[in-house]
Image (tube, rainbow over all chains, first blue to last red; front, side, top):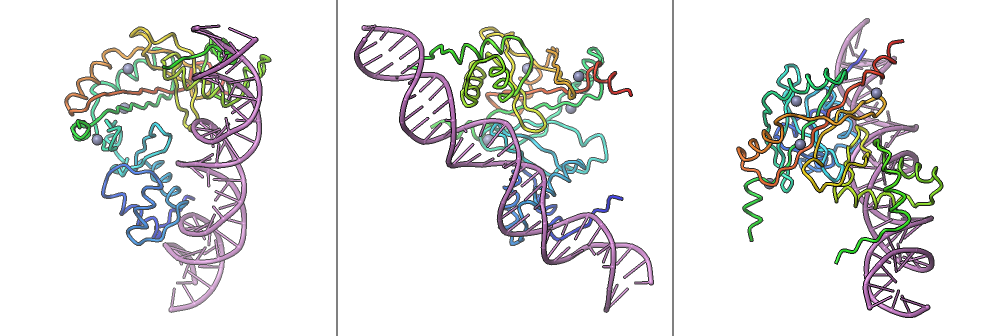
Length: 136
Length: 136
DNA sequence: GTCGTTCTGCGAATGATTATCACTAGGCGT
DNA sequence: ACGCCTAGTGATAATCATTCGCAGAACGAC
Ligand SMILES: [Zn+2]
Ligand SMILES: [Zn+2]
Ligand SMILES: [Zn+2]
Ligand SMILES: [Zn+2]
């Protein structure tokens, strides 16, 4: 039913994605072109969206409204879910563990009678490097 | 330096905001026009943005990327900060309390050396009413 | 009332994302 | 290796929420 073909473009995207870091769709596009691949912007968007749905990349939305994507181990296992602490200045992100949060969420949900809960936690601040650089 | 004038438009916006609920900027705009006020869309955007910055309204971004605004007591006191559990179907939102979360955030932040942390928690699910309505 | 600012309205501009649609190319059966 | 069917691609147009730019309107202190 759902045939997914491995194309040159998709491979290139996956390959680029492999060296970590958050980048916008357009950012990845530039990256790919810089590497010599001729990939269309629309294709990059489609690829990222597909990967995001299958859990292979996770996304985060910046204050300015653009979506950032980053490769993130296959979502086969529970560990695919986690949260980030991201630097407002340079974008560097750290995976964090929020002990007990998943449980709290489940409790709050049932307390209010809500079903099919999904959640988002976004922590952003200024990383040590940027904080140091800011001291001028 | 920063004088803020109370205009007919701003008053109308504040007044409309008063009857709670999340609405998009365009949503509030329609609301205002429905009430007879002739307010420009841009003005509504500007007003909401200002109120949001001063903490009088809080915002939430939907999956489709549009920003929703809702009146929320003046941010003079600590209680201005809280989180929501929102229904994906009807938009109804409940204020929730996530015990100890603020503390956990602070700890995580310092653990990673990040400064000026700000956070967002978004819980969304299907409220009891919508869940019931879905059973057809 | 007068005046310096701030605010408003309008439409045009932006900018990220999506839709279109003719064309290309996986990849399975042979 | 050959061909067909269909998913994938790419250039561009379209969407859509939000922002800008600027001329004129309206605060509000004097
Ligand atoms: Zn940084
Ligand atoms: Zn979680
Ligand atoms: Zn509901
Ligand atoms: Zn909080």
